[in-house]
Image (cartoon, rainbow, N blue to C red; front, side, top):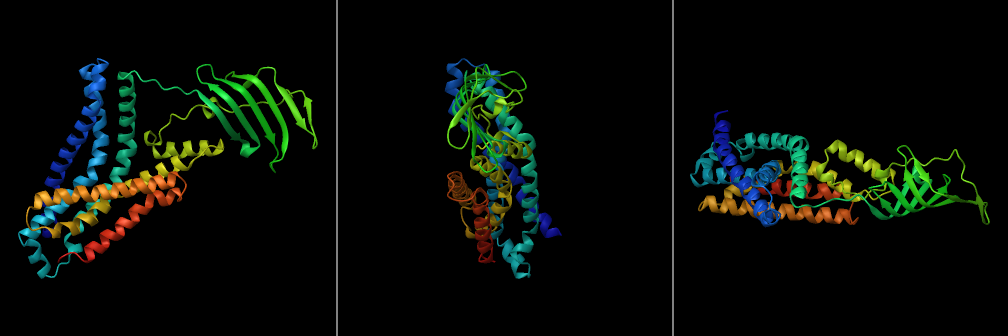
Length: 354
């Protein structure tokens, strides 16, 4: 349809110009926020430039929704101010029909943005953080203290005073053995346990068997092996935002198997799927915002876009925080703002000026 092609030609150039502007803005903000740190460690300019380049895909991910919001609000605002949409409406074409190509564009960008984040943004962001830590001489340690790990569906509970990641040792180890009903069977104590590549080798272990009334000292059976991987006890330096969706799901399974909290990681995983719907949400908002302004369309479209984006991201941040604090389920924390703003967008379009 000629009308649809005309509207797309109005939106696309503005979208790419806005995307370039916001990507540049976000890149400069990140650069100048850390530039003094890089210079204080005498980081090479080439390495600093590489940090900026590796951050560009993440900037595109952040900038895409707001660029889309601004471009559609501005394009439709211009059409309103020139009375072109008035002619379209008086000819019997409703707003949703005229905006059909940008709605399709939003759905396509929602799908593309998910795979773009999963396949391009995550690897480059991980590389950017790694290079940045190297330039700033920051080291990560996997050593951990006061560790409690449940395995075999809770039948074995490891209580560790300190896990040394460098030598892969468990210091101050207590292993509690329970049956399927959760009743205590035995307690094993060892001053230190070393990982030999396939299982933990306990130094001078002491085993106490519960006979129902008292603990009875016994010898650790040779057939008893403890093969929980060292990574289970390691301080979690894994950021779900640096994992693909498939890897994040496996990581959550590992946390669950080890009896560790999964709410935060599960919320972040759900949030990734929800964030991919953002381009579609901003289109619903921008279609109604475009009809509000007949003067200063550029300034007002930019301002309304920024305000709408801030409100949406703040709502998402609050719901995510509530989910991670277990006030609401992780699924609700990730998706509640999406459904709320979809409803708001539909209502705004329903009452938009036509």
